[in-house]
Amino acid sequence: MAIDLPDTATPERDYRALRRAGGLRLMRCRCQAGRHDRGCDEQHQAYSVTLIERGTLSYRTRAGRAVLSPGWLMLGNAGEGYICSHELSDGSGDDCVVLSLSRETLDDAIDALALPSSAAGFDRASLPPSPRVAALLSALLAHGDEGFALEEAALAVIDDVQRAL
Image (cartoon, rainbow, N blue to C red; front, side, top):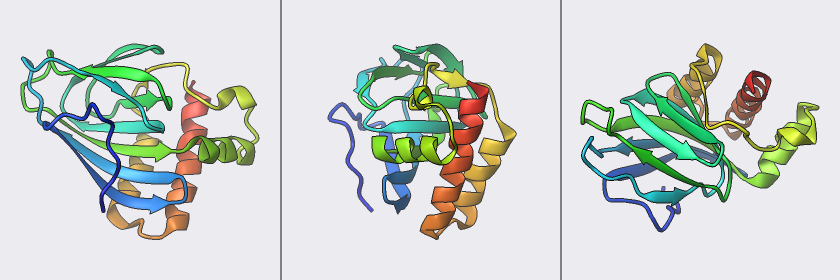
């Protein structure tokens, strides 16, 4: 299944769509960038919660800066620019699982969870490891073929992320 990549996608980065349901997408991202490769300006196409599975990367966005390693969550807001680089890595890139949400889907999740409307977005660049979010995304990778599984997991992920924020 092909997905739309930002115009600034680099050949070192490969996104593979795994599941899709409405405004939700679950993707796997493999980045081959090494520590001497320069980070490039990119833009989040949707809201996203990204689980770092392997590697270390530096992430810079308007919401802040972070050095992320396995287990950490990278948070992205639709339309916001960001830069990822690997100057602190072992040179082998990184692997991530990306849960991507359209604005409408995020708004629906915020309403369903009875969270304040101010929760519709992320005011931090990252969160420390969350075993629950990691388990939810891992379960989707293993056997989440049904759209409702993706939708239910997305609600739980957004709930956990917003509570942590």
